[in-house]
Length: 143
Image (cartoon, rainbow, N blue to C red):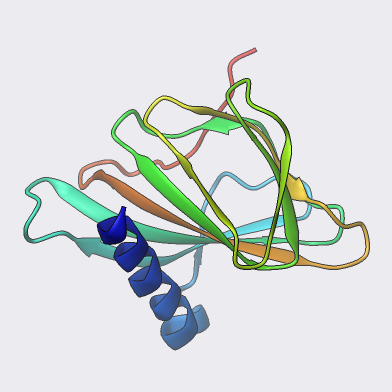
């Protein structure tokens, strides 16, 4: 877990240092959600894997549609600002506040991901460890 926290810190630092310099809107947003790839780096000591940092910015009341991620993806998410309501698989809907984090394992379903506030924005950084060849990071839930 220390390696994942170190990777998350590196990605968070990339967000702070790179800001919008690397910003490319990525798919996967919903109403009031802006999704931006802010960091993408091949892991030299883990052949075939990369680390990618995705900044998700929610407008007040904003949300992302229910989704999954690539089967190769491990995700560590940390709330940077505001509060995020989240539900992974059939677990409880939980509110995470700035500084709090959660993870998603390969194959998990992320049914709820939304700003917990209707008046203040919220941001989270999702750090992916994923196959380098994987281009899409988010897929809509099949109904």
